[in-house]
Image (cartoon, rainbow, N blue to C red; front, side, top):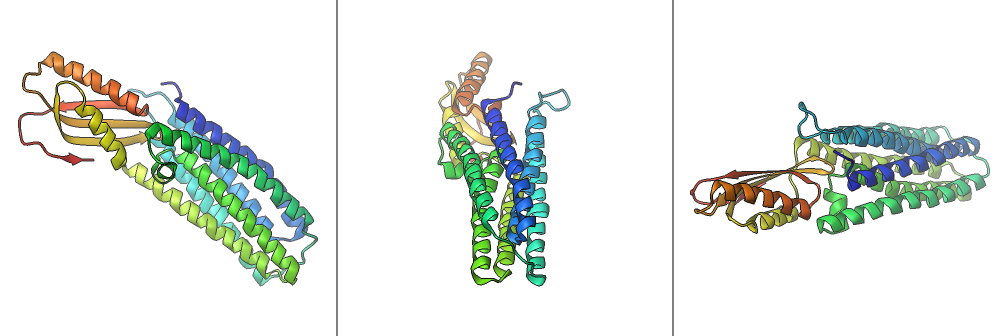
Length: 315
C-alpha cells in the first residue's frame, strides 16, 4: 500500500518541525549556560523534548505506513498511535519535568545572570523558525479539514492524525514558551531578581505538561478504539442509503485503524427483490462512494440483514 498524500504530508510536517527544534535547541542551551538564565535552559529542554517527540513521531509514521500482511491484514496504522503516545510521554518527562525542576532550582539557588542580549536574539530567531513550522502544520490541518468537510478546529480536537496534531500543539506551545522565556528574562533584568526567570521556567514546564496530557489522552482513546465523529458517520450513512438496492441501515460501525485508515462495517437492509448479483453490485458501489467521500476509508464491509424491524444504532 503506497504512502497516502495525508501520510506524506504528515511526514514532511514532522521532519520540518524536528529540524527546527534541533537547530534552535542547542543554541538555546548554549545561551542559557552563558547567561545563567533558567528560562533559556527550560526552553532548551523544551526544544530537546520536541526534537525527541518528532523522532518518535517519524518512526511511528514510517512503521505505521508498512504494507498489510497476512498476520496484520488491516496494516500497521495503529502502531503510529503507540509511538505518538511515547512522544507525549517524552514531552512530559523531558520538557515538563526537567523545566519545572530547573525553575525550582533557580529560585532556591539564585544565579548571577549575564547580559541577556544574546538570549533575546536567540528567542527572536526561534520565534521565526517555530512560526514557519507552525504554518506548515496549520496548512496540513486545513487540508484535512477540507477533505473531511469539517472546521479546522474539529481536526485539531478530533483528528486521528496525531503526528500533525502533536506538531501543531508543540509549535503553538513553543511560541507561548518563547514569550514566557522572554518575559522572565526581561523581568529579571528590570528587577534584578532571578525569581521571574525561575517562574518563567516553571510556567514553561506547566505548559508542556498540558500539551503532554492532551496528546496522551488523544492517543489512548485511539488505541482503545474510536469511531468517526457524528458528522462523518452521518455522511457515511447518507452515502450508503444512496446506493441502489439499499433500503435501510440497521447498524453502522466505524473505527480508526490508523491516522489515515478507516474501517466501515454496516448491517444493511436490501430491497426485497434484490438478487445476490444486486447485493454484490451494491457492495461495490458502496465502496466506491465511501472512498470518494473520505479517501481514508480503506475497508468497507456490508452485512445483509433480514426483514426484522430496523434499528438506528450507530457507532
